[in-house]
Length: 172
Ligand code: HEC
Image (cartoon, rainbow, N blue to C red; front, side, top):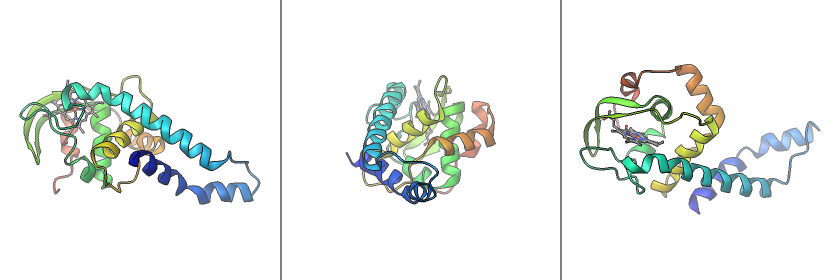
């Protein structure tokens, strides 16, 4: 529920843009409250569905498996709080990850293959919002959206999974 609310707040914060468009007579926005609830719900369901791909390794709870699969319920909100961290998270989903990964709950030397095949930038945004919104209940991290994901992947291009680790912000 909190997650839906945070998505709704994210959309509501873009209200001035809609309002300005309406005043300028450019478009007649649909009733916003109804739209917010509808999009918030659909996005949450979509993100949850995508996350099923991850849960075999990172577990449904995001706690991972010590020594094998890193947790997604400890540091991802911190990563999602900085621009570099957000780019890194998007890069992991689009390119995979390989190499010596040092996290707050252990060191991993594993291989994760890319997960974004057949998915749109909106799907990836929904996925990352699901992770942050579900595993970090009190997080005030800004929601990802399709435009941001697209801008990041356009800037990065396709990367080898062994190049992604270098993008992880060092100081946490
Ligand atoms: C087959 C197992 C597997 C699946 C499925 C998988 N991952 Fe991973 N993931 C890994 C491994 C292994 C690593 C660590 C790689 C390393 O050691 O360099 C990792 C690392 C990560 C990291 C980096 C964590 C950090 O603290 O920097 C993120 C983020 C991540 N995965 C997200 C996801 C998401 C999101 C999905 C689903 C779309 C997913 N993974 C699916 C195995 C998996």
